[in-house]
Length: 218
Image 1 (cartoon, rainbow, N blue to C red):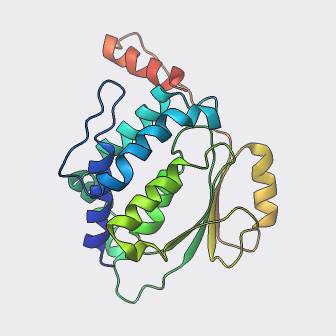
Image 2 (cartoon, rainbow, N blue to C red):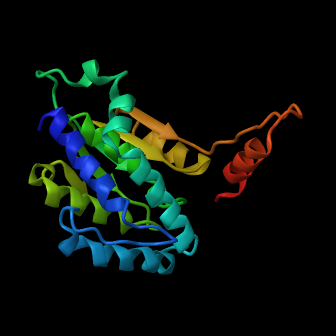
């Protein structure tokens, strides 16, 4: 698959996601495969809280809107512009990247998923027990748009095997396990993170509202 093809598939996914909003969900006739996916995804949004109590419809819709806004041709091109020459080489060897995803925020692992696929690699995915439905559904949509993604995406429930490198996200405790278990593999292992905001008294109302969003969103 060419880079342009992969980008176009994710743009189609963005178009699909744009239909879903907490205020108003509108089924559009020009969106690919709505007959197969629209109704089921709308149901999944409202069932998500039964799978994970933190995944209220408000939070799921927020995540969907964030990715719908991000997955435009302009935004993807802007994001990739700094890296394209590094992964668009014809002789680049495809790698299988294991992804161990967190489950604290709806679609929290989507950026890793997107990064692996758009760079021409395979994603071997172990979802969190708290988030086993949203990403697999979107993966099915990608495959429906372009079946070449079918052999690029694999979800596993048990032990991860036959991969080249790993990206794992978890707590400080699970990070110690990941570091030991994957000590022989190239890896990115994310732990707990803390942030600090320094205020100087010159913040606008909008600044403070945005800070409040960052603090209280989840």
